[in-house]
Amino acid sequence: MDSKELAQYLENTDGITKPWLLVQLRLQKLKERRDSISSVTYEQELADICQDLMNLGEWWQGIEDEVF
Image (cartoon, rainbow, N blue to C red; front, side, top):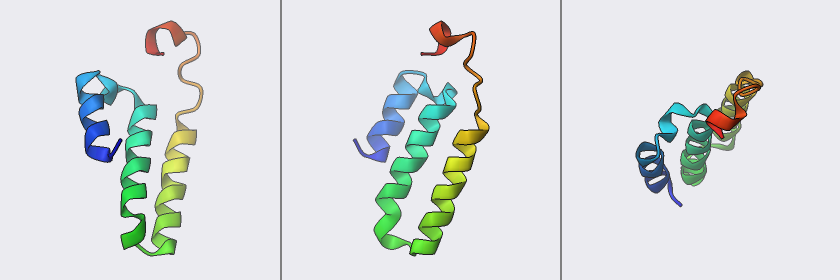
């Protein structure tokens, strides 16, 4: 699934409100750009995405049935 298909899926399933799915979209877009950017830029953007994922923490605890 490419980033356009993933974005459309997120819109159609209200996934845009789920931050972990937005992280997946960012990863897919980065993957698609990998050949056109430097390795330093790729590593910086990957680290940024990783940090954003870690910043999500364990926000789902107690509401697992609602969000998963």
